[in-house]
Length: 364
Image 1 (tube, rainbow, N blue to C red):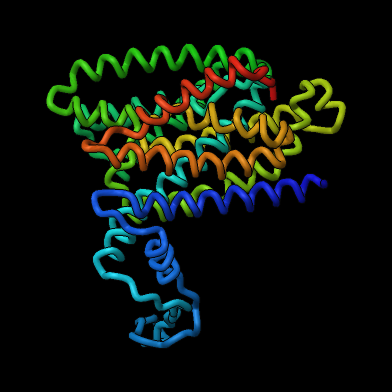
Image 2 (spheres, one colour; image 1 turned 180 degrees about the horizontal axis):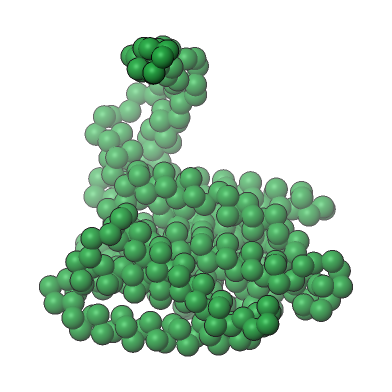
């Protein structure tokens, strides 16, 4: 079976699994909604453009007033479903579910790249300090009541990207970035940022609960604007990672061999590191620190599909989306909601230990 066929087969299968998990999750909550009803609601929500209408007017210099074209959409389905169930699914549960899917998708994709980049199955998206950097920005914004553009998410994203850039600068020498030095620089920066976070926690006062909730990872209060933002931002960097999946395969042979095979090693490393860091920063900025998704899911999928990143990368991303939707469903379904990061750690850590005990940990 060719690589393209394997990648397509695994991607379609895992996409089907993701749809199933989304439908089941949307029906679980204080009000139980049957999966069949959820599927009907989702089908009704689908719409296709059928034409363009001219309505209203826009004033333009010289030209004057001109009609404004508007796309007309219509749903190909018209299922009879209760209005309360429709509101619950589309307005309350679906934004959170889709945000969980996008965050899980991003973290698993970034974790796959980081494990290949460092040639270490224990690597995860936060290994270069991205999550710690985001945490400093978010916690400082909450504790110090800072008012900045784009709010808490903007602070977390900028802080995460700056941290990754600082780690890269510290690890670079004479135009080269040794992987071992990059790893050590990331550990050092994470330790330093952890001290800053601890100090801010001591100063948090009444905002302590909000800070701890963010640090544990959360998806409560998800909005359609956050879903739209991630939907617009993630495709391009993910496509860049997929395009360079073959180069990542070659880097696994070692930098000298990769250079001999025509790979621009330093440029490729810079691109992979920067893109994976941005993907992680975007995810963490809206969800807080959610652990184990980018560690366990890529490792598990590597055991199933093999180490070829042309297959592994899309498969891990889709599996990560399903994993986080499922764990977030557990987090919000109890008597009291708990941060999803607690559930991913509670599920991921024992499972990862099981893999360590029962299977050989394979290097990427």
